[in-house]
Image (cartoon, rainbow, N blue to C red; front, side, top):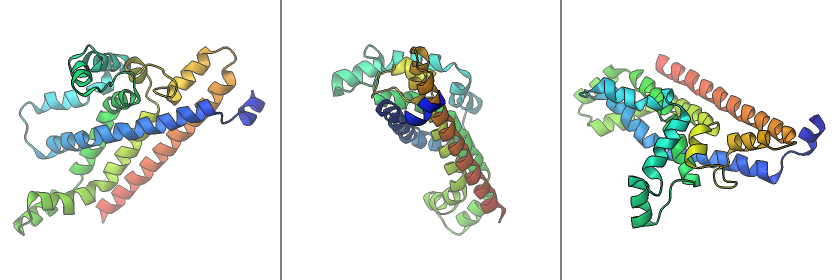
Length: 236
């Protein structure tokens, strides 16, 4: 097995799964980050009626089985679903069983991670600096762009990296909503699952597992470095 691990890596299928994992994780951030910023801002800067319920809904994917999340997306965005049917009939766009569908499922699962990291970063910003800028005549947008976001940026980046690393490992929601289609939705976790199920796939499974662990560790290390940077910045 060790010889196969060294001599057989990488092959085209494994590289394709790696490429697709990176693409899906990146697209999931594009889908989720704007909404995560808005949700975190509402939770930290706006007095919302029913805020505990809103907070619970934001973090709901953390406690739901990923398969349930994928099934819910399938009901909504499948060809017979209210949103998926409308998109297909009016715009000719199919979401389920596509790369975009895999990214959407990943975005939903990593959304609470993004919101929590951004929320903590925003709460760590000294509100006195914002108040001082307000007394000097700075508008809300000016305060956001010149004070709040720059001070919160290290924490936001740490959350983005953590969510990206988590997105690389998403399995249940992706396989339920986007299936396990080579070149379309077969990311690293799904390729690993396929290798485990195939006779004689132990060497491939070992390579994919090692690659997944490496990417996950790299993401966590980068997130920790960004978190330390945030603490240094806010401690000045």
